[in-house]
Image (cartoon, rainbow, N blue to C red; front, side, top):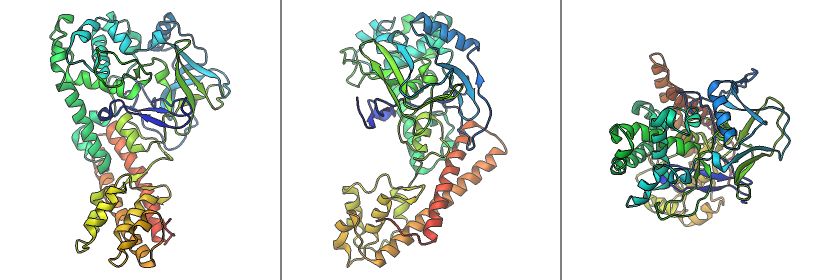
Length: 466
């Protein structure tokens, strides 16, 4: 197994992500209350000393556990509960020690492309040319099974899936516009990806007409496909399948895992999780101790809130990995157009990868941001030292002062943008309160704290790291 975090991106434009931490870290699992979705709750900033509410006797969870038991899954370690700070999750029933096996889910409980090929969709998929993607196969199956209702063999699982998601692809455009620029542009791209995913496969959906009494296009609608796309994109765990001729060349690494996907995410929590080929089960072992009636967590990597919001629809309060991104356009607005070497400096930064992932963090501006600004602040007589700058060497006091002034201007500009957005949100909240608006507010407030901290450091003349 891998011993470091490795990102798997079988569908890069779709935003699907899988991570190995120790063995593997799974995608995060958050609130899945009906009509709110797995990504439908905000993380509270302060811990509330309120006991979790056991939900294992609720009818939908009773039916889910019975359904899982019929498929070979027995569990006495965890129970479904509602937690005041994270929403729905899984609660321990007794003390768990590091290394304990907390979930062992049989292959028969997993929803994969094997499930789809063995179903009524199998022949349609095998005959279709060009071959469909594994993602399309799973999305089509999810929509078809949800339409089948009580006739679906997967009904107990479908009943606990969210009816919508809080990913930006579900947001109104005016709320998207309140996001910070980097994630705003990615949110627009996400919407385009899903729209293209739907429109490019309408002919395949029509080919399934004989399966339905109603018009196939009225069942496999954009809204339905968007729901299925988000279900796969936010909930699947990594499980590699062999390449098959009936599918496109895209990697087939998806598995929807009922009950397991009720686990919530927490930064810093490590688990060992993978599909056990010998016994054909998906297993999770915790690496920390859990007390009785405590919430069990998983973690899927050191990701900032912009990424969490974009791909999973939630913001983690006090996220240690949170950053505020600086776009090239923001930097350019504070550079002198009279600098004859500006174009060359910009080219050098681009060639050496210094125009991406420029950030402010909990401890102020990142080394990468400062290095880029130091190079841009080189005087004409200092330009020959650009390699030294990229290697982190000191050039001159004047260069440091110019860099300090530039980074402060950028920080204050981002603070102004953030304040404007928060004022807009505050005005809107007087007329309407939506979870989407609250998510933007939480993201902006977290970024405001980071920027204010950075501005204080810079204003007090704290030595910038070399």
